[in-house]
Amino acid sequence: MGFLLGIDEAGKGPVIGPLVIAGVLISEENEEKLKKLGIKDSKELSPEKRKKFFEEIKNLSEDFVVLKISAGELNREMDTKSLNEIEIGRIAQIINSFWMKRPKVYIDALEANTKKFKEKILSRLKDKKIEIIAENNADKTYPVVSAASIIAKVTRDSEIKKLHKKYGFFGSGYPSDERTIEFLEKLDREVYNKIVRLKWETSKNILKNKKQRKLLEF
Image 1 (spheres, rainbow, N blue to C red):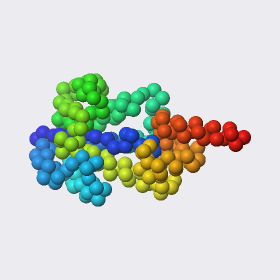
Image 2 (image 1 turned 30 degrees about the vertical axis):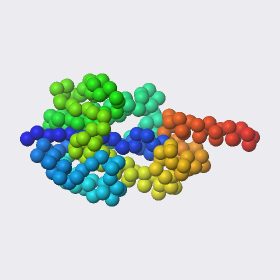
Image 3 (image 1 turned 45 degrees about the horizontal axis):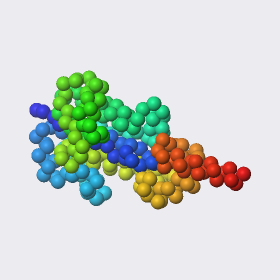
Image 4 (image 1 turned 90 degrees about the vertical axis):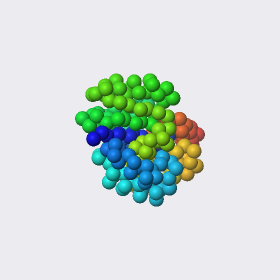
């Protein structure tokens, strides 16, 4: 029996909260069952539908892995690595955790040059002979990648709810969300360092403006 491994992420763009990368391992015979469920890219589904599919995907999968990279971890790692390098390392980690199953791997590629992206992943693998299909928008093409995108998105949404409960509502956490920007402008610096991605231009500009305001007040 052969296996398929789909990998995708959620939360690359937000300025608040974790980046989540998920890997879903299914048997080849269950691929058709995923298709029949109507699994789609998570962005095309309502939150209710994603939650429903989340449970069904878990039941159909042989196994799955979810890696949560907190804002604090991103802040530390981005001192020496790009965001894509961090993600590539985690993607390789997911594949390596299943290498004994020798799955055929499908990845929603992070870079336009999918050939180079694939080479970067392969260079980090225990088994260099594993077959990898890395494509842009693979989450719209391959059900197993769509499944991974749903697992990642539902997990991130759950983490964001926890942050809302602990620190107050801040909207989606994306720089385009006015509620997020308003929240960041009022946020205490200690909490800011814990939950905000400090390498993002949005957060840099807000901190710069806060500093300037303090100087003016002084």
